[in-house]
Length: 523
Image (tube, rainbow, N blue to C red; front, side):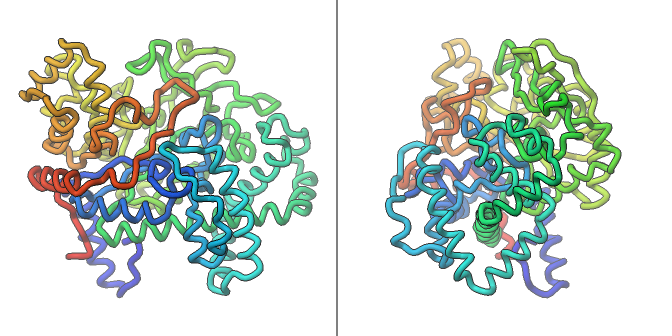
């Protein structure tokens, strides 16, 4: 059990009770990415506002906090396009917590108090990173022996990804933030002599990168422990693919479909679907699964083990890609022309199940789902996802309708890729709205709450509601529009939005539908 340090026998008993609670009890939670938290930094962080949100979850009878990926963001500030599949986003580090840790002085924070009504990633980069640089210098000079030892242990335990990540980020900065394929050939091709020279030349910069990762995971671990002691599970998100301009592709070229210059030849996406008439061309390089199988999927083993250490539950984004991937030739401008490429998901998950046991994985099984994908999901008893906004545009056999939900599933009003529920409702014509009313047997006069209540009443064991819906926000609060590269991930709620009235309403509804908080600290 996360954070438990007591007697081993008691630990075993309580962990068993916690696991039973996690897997079988009806529960509910909220979807909120940390960048959307309020606070004095230009984007939300792992500071006091995150702890306050945990307190709100507990007080409103919720048991799960779902987040988007936490990695360092690349183009468009997209959390699904990261420079690393293992690292944390330094912009989420809370600077006031570094004052408490002794790495900064209060006077060092000026002029960081620039809270904005939406996320401001550019300002966060401009203001926060120099503060982190100073904090790293201070930590190196005067960090306590306990934290210095913890830093050394962190660097040793995580060297398998941390060393390459630190070098990648430092070289990227030295090369004017160009993609690694545009670096000098000896660096892009990872000439061993050139890399050793860079490591010797850039020791201080490498130290700074490792320090930032240390404090990120120091703060994340503390927040997760706090949440777990309040009975809140942290629900993470694992994107199946990685960005072409990432340390994973640079350091493991043999695992991806690349040409001799390191550029992708086959890229990922999805064919035309609900979200886009031309499909979605994500541009991530596809895996050479046959090569990965040669070493027993060690890269995937490491990735899953790390994520299951960080989170209590894990949503696997684009789960169908573990059955087959939509392979698009890199020279195609859209996702219309592609082919399905099979993937050995059953082999991989069987291996992980033997190592870990029951896998707390939720399969993002939206879009084009074939019987093979359903068989893979059900073979390992992974819960699937049900989106209520998709439920009312066809007949009684629509799998997203509440009466078609299964207990082993997670129901949402909408996800980060959907409009807010109020925005969705406002976009429907009168015929579409009447279909919703007819299905729900509800006049739907105070949307989005009729849809929230429908989600909570569902037979699905877990209900997740985006915070935008709980706050009854319009389309302007939408998190992401799939297929668009800019203008996303900007929404941020305000201090004071989570009123006692909202807390009470959510708690009462969760109790009414048997989703009251399961708090192991009270067992």
